[in-house]
Length: 288
Image 1 (cartoon, helix red, strand yellow):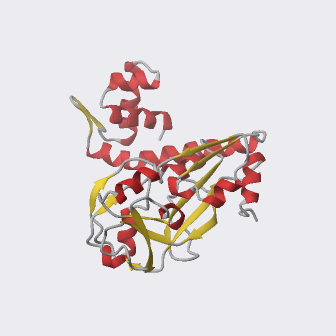
Image 2 (tube, rainbow, N blue to C red):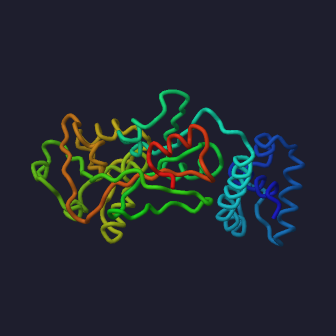
Image 3 (cartoon, rainbow, N blue to C red):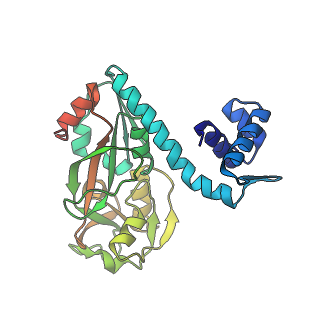
């Protein structure tokens, strides 16, 4: 499959318009039509209806593969360029909001660093495609277990920290005075759905057999302070690493005693880090 044709197909499907896709890609509309026709001929199936422009059943199935295929191509291109390029004196670090713990922040160089806070699924992709030199991913895990990361490209992942997790409760909550709490005791409570600021509810469900933890409010942002303010105001509970949950006005951080879970942070890189990226990896003790 020609990747140029595949990119054109994805653009038309995303924008639901041949003319908008042509404008977005810098092609003529006739070139876009030719690309789609060539791809349909290659696969032997119609991929798009024309009025309205929408994927057919075959087109929907192709879209399920297209993102991963194009990402791996971009990752391969970035990997080759990374080997051929001279070391960069600057450093771009992609990280989730809760991965930037005190130890990581203290290890950052004093100058020349760009930190990009991204959604969880976007961090491995940013490293794979060369948009970031290093990545910091985080999530729930059993002690010493690695994170389950999306298979976007051959990436190296090293653990740089583990810490206990706490449920952030409003100060007036009936369980706020407990020294510890079992996660299962809160499975039927109202939770904040904040996949890119807190620890995702899907992780909590997985730790509790795949059920419970219904959301009461969805927060689509990466600001941990905004998330903790919502929890303190009683809009729902949230699970956070201990360092992020402590000292929140109007809220109490109660450690989770069961199941045995930790907040794990891993440093991600492709190939072998050089320059400022290598210095940070060394400072975090992640390189063999």
